[in-house]
Length: 335
Image (cartoon, rainbow, N blue to C red; front, top):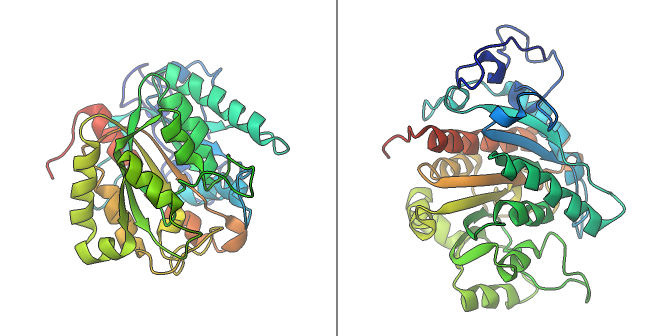
């Protein structure tokens, strides 16, 4: 997409604004995240980016139904429907922060450990440049190498929207790295402060209680789906904000947090979840937090060729982008 120039370093610079649907129809042009400029590492304006949207097309940690490797491409395609202002909060993120599509991490589809090393190196460069990453995955194991970069200098708090804890230890007797174990590893590695860690939406059948027992042993707060429905999104998010406090916080949003009626395109769906409105509510409930990075993972296009799941996913990424841009600008609205 062609961009006009502007004053370097100016948030209002047209270069960092998305292409309007009034200038180029949404079905035209090369799709980038939210029609933003593509700014790879060697771009002359890379150093000016404040929030970098990144694709993580990798699902090497998937243990059942694959497909999230195709998520970033479909998320980008559906993101052409995103407009420049949030119609619920009236936040205009592209007026508040310099945002750009930094492209995709290049995984090694034949080597899980090398893929994680590549991802960590990619995000090391992003973080070193002072850019806050907002990632479209990819399976949930992608979050671990991202956290290794984002939390390299200090542990972060975390809010996780999910139907599974992803706090398991080992799968199949030997697998310590898959989409069911990333946050067990992250806590063990000191990347997440467990006292500032809140999981929301957990439900479904279980292999056992090991993950819950681990959470209790280190002080992680789990809010299961029954409690979420009983209390409501606003009350639950008030507690989540209190848990993570004012310190640096990572947000990870697994699309299977949402009920499969509204998000069927995912590998491990669980019934009884929130609807799409509640999914948006909890994302808006992040306002005011110091979100230093976020991801939206587990969108699997082969299980929803219509694109409805990806449309919800990119809408949630936009909500998180609004939260991040508000914080960067210092213009956080009163609740």
